[in-house]
Length: 499
Ligand SMILES: [Zn+2]
Image (cartoon, rainbow, N blue to C red):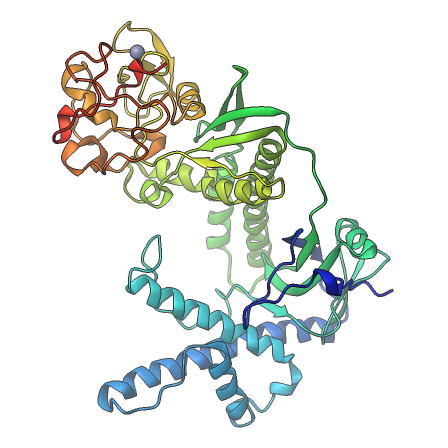
């Protein structure tokens, strides 16, 4: 019955204050199950009440922070509440009786989740402002309204159980919920004592209810992958083009679920806009749209999980690109292109791969962002000519033969950095006939515009390692010369001279 297995004392490690340390040999994993909305109306409304409580605490905290910021402007000696979970919860507990006399109806975890979410949002904003955070700028948190809030309450204490019938999950305050799918994959581990539940998050999406368990799981020994090395070119035509060290090329199709459902979505969207809010027809159209959304999300998830699981289990070394997806979504031409970028969801692949390879003690190799994998001709070294932007078939500048862009990129990545040049291909432009370096190149690599100009080119990294040879630009594939330097255009790292 006791499904909460605990880590034996000997395996416990001392964690830094306030942090949980994963014991050696264990890994963090999440298990998510969709559960049915309870038929009992009272229980269902209690669940909605938890979500509301969470949102209320978030908005209350944000109100406090804003009031503090305003007060600080007029009176620099004003005592503001600190932006951490501990201080804010303390203030909440002191004030809850006055501002939310109904607080006892919900779990304390509901309010704690709201405040914790606010603290994360504030930290992200402040880190982003100070330049400590990667990625796009993060805005100041906004008040959440009922219709737009991504509701989710995280329980960390109390009765969190996956029952042995493999259909029922138990949460504190909420009680038992029936899972729509078998919970075997978690229950089995809990039964054996090789998993431990740390928290459970109850959340709502597309009107459906989900419970996800944050667990630590004993990392059972896995067989080492049998194959050596592989280069993975991520893209939108096919999700991934894979070139391995045995010479195989594998193309993984892109499900592109948004593109597949776009026509349908437009039709349903029109239906929705024609119907009266609050009517049965309106809610039916809304549900239809949500169903399409959900299907898209699931298809993307399935594709990336299958790809990353297979890669991690098959290859010891996986070379992937360091894609600047934020830039691809922002600046790259047509709207349909940017939509495809989002539709493909390339951003999830690298973290998933890192996570799954970690179970076997390996790590993916990430190629330099400035390495123009699709425009350097593998095995030739020329800069390929693009007949059209983002063209699939490129043309060799030396022989004029057609080259498949994605396959070429995958092969380049597989041999990175031993074989490939670490300089930008823009540097070879003056002596290889090709399109003018007007900064409109790129394609799925999304090299920012600057990469084509030698003056803004970042200093080449990893030079002089593992057979990197620098050559005179004039005799591209001739005699290698060590240590050729000087600014921009004259320094060329030709891949043709290596190997
Ligand atoms: Zn060529």
